[in-house]
Image (cartoon, rainbow, N blue to C red):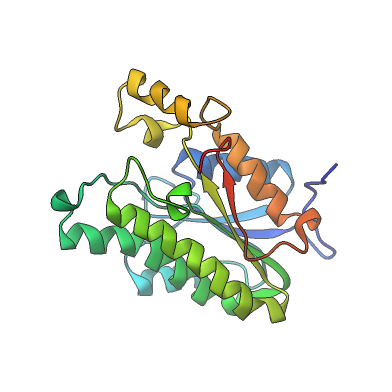
Length: 235
């Protein structure tokens, strides 16, 4: 059995986490709290009183937020992002740039800003999507491209960071039983999606969080550069 005890000699496992305002990010927060991690969160929601507040489209604000995080990070978990629908003729260049700023560019900025805080046992996990393995049947072209970008970033940074002992992976959810998954469909349309999923249901946010917990654990110590579908078999 994989242990989710992340404690390390000399103190708690230090995690920097984004996206706690969403169901997946919140489930990750709960999973890591139950494992005894010490968690610092960055959010763009001023109502998240426990978080460092930053605009995810502002590089300088993100770098300043990272500066407020612990000097020694064992894990960086990036779970923020949003979905916007297409088709292409309804996605303006401004829409395109804004979504990529949040879903892709901010991820790179946060990783880059955190490099001097990571060490030879640190792990980075990004919440991507099965859209980055094919395309999104719900989101617009910019959403699909943002997730392909994340998965490509994982593959590239695996080579860059591997010699330093830093692992990087992504989790690629398919349909998730959460407000974002249901926002663009009626209940009947949502349930019709099950026909394309071999396991005939959506994922619970806790199932995504469990996969993140595994990737952060010692049981995944030789896994890096992987874009892992957690999708009930949907590709």
